[in-house]
Amino acid sequence: MKKLFLSLAFLMFVALAFGQESAMPPKDLSGFSGYAWASDIAYIESTMDTKGFELIASGHRDLWYRGEILGEGLHLVYYFENGMLMGGMWIFDHASKDAYWEVNHFLRDAYQSTASLKIRGDNFIESEMGPYGSDAWIIHELDIERERHIVHYYYRRGEE
Image (cartoon, rainbow, N blue to C red; front, top):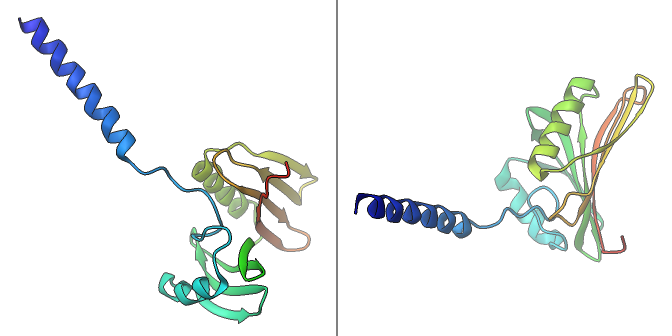
């Protein structure tokens, strides 16, 4: 009887664990910096100030913000086609290898993705990611000679 009770209790805990896991919403990895692809330019502009980013420039094809990600100052750029979000960039203030690797690890962890690296000499690193479960194509670039540290996000339209 004791074995039967322990077996039933074990099965109940396993069922609860699986039930709790399946009740968790899936992590949405679509879009760019908190907004889904095809989000409306007016919606993004009206909600970004609540996230602590300062609008510094706007046009019919882009919105430029100033802010901080991972403790690093940056420009955050949203690109639009026909008023809908189709791409974006993080342009970091500092172009250092330490900052590059911190951001690269952050991206790989967030997307549970591997990255294809290209290294040219001591001053250029590029990483590409097409994370499973995301419709983003991400290119992370460090060019120390040009003092550039940029993460590009592109909407994958299914051509690949």
